[in-house]
Length: 326
Image (cartoon, rainbow, N blue to C red; front, side, top):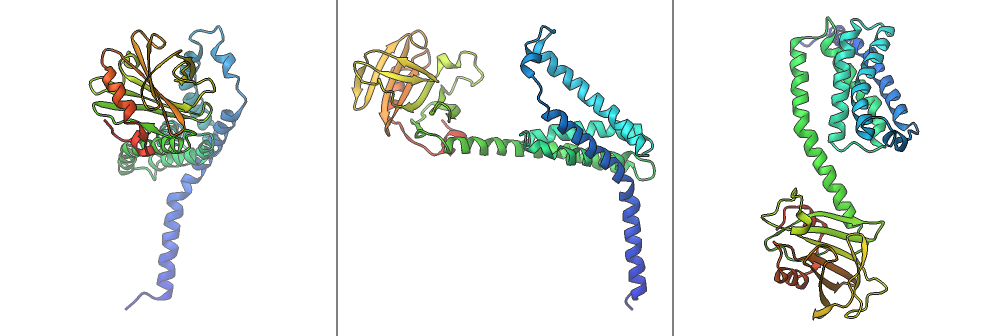
């Protein structure tokens, strides 16, 4: 036979009482965490004069200030949390404060790693730190904590590392795609036979688009990558651009007057000089109503490569500049 109404009601009341017994002790630590998060947010939005802090005569300048904050903020947060937990009647307060401080710092770092580093996202800090202190109480308080919960907490932290990394990469990729899609000039790029494309940047302020092409053997981390690769700048046509007598163009954020240049193909000119390095070669192409400047000629870039790049320039989709290429 099925359970009677009284039995079902008693079973429901028992479950509710059991839930209150588990969740009740977490409420005050969670409240303390929310208060700490609100205080953290208040400190973050205060009008700090970082220029004075960074350019002061104190040792290490900005670096010293940053290291000091990394050491002081977690310590102060833990001490303040311990005081607030004691006032709230949580015992032992030190255990929850210590673990809560570690979890709060971990949560903040993982949140930033997942792409939540903007000022708007910072307003989630009270909720995030409240959850950290509730988790600390759930595993550290006598009567409700257990080895099993310690294991669950450790496993959750380990799983959050690859998850937040994937979310962060996706966030960065989405931001970069939005930036490129909003470019004020066409996203022109050549065929990349033997080359890879790095550091695409569409500047809304300058109204330009630029990137670096590197031969496959050259690493993006190479100190001399600019000298060994091809810097490409796409920009509106300068008012003084009148080839072949005057070839005034934008190059990596700066205006360059190359002087006379040689026409080598329709709407394509060549100029060699030392404007951006010894032995530099510039190819200037007028495409889609804008000017594309390709600068190279180092030990790993041939004139033939530059000419082929100028010839193969075409408008690309943002995904071309973000995924593996070359």
